[in-house]
Image (tube, rainbow, N blue to C red):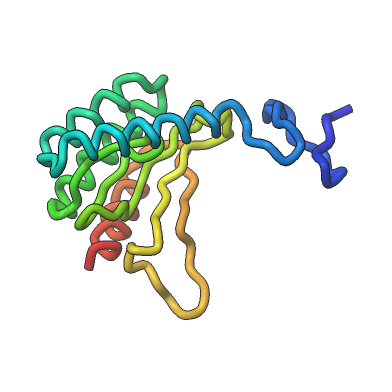
Length: 160
């Protein structure tokens, strides 16, 4: 029998449910601690160069397990080629890209939150608006040429 969430619904096999009622998971707490460290480091350094943010981002990518590492590396190349105005940085310990200090998009590895797939997410600063509803996060299982092309279009649109 599969474990049940507080709502009484079954949880898919392989998904961890180690969460205190009304609390955060260990992964979520770790991400919040990383964000606090990032904010502290940014305030000590003042305005950071893009190169500093990029080295932090590349270090986070290097820590990832495969296939997340390969997808994050390729995403970094796509963002640099299609939106050079975006500054690489980390955000909650994840690779992210900012415009004027505000995060436009980020990569969340599958292994970080014990998820089934990695995620490419966009924040509200991204110009992806289409009518009354549009997606702001995309599941990534592999970087195929078609996926890379879609990402390039999304990144370009996000900063337009």
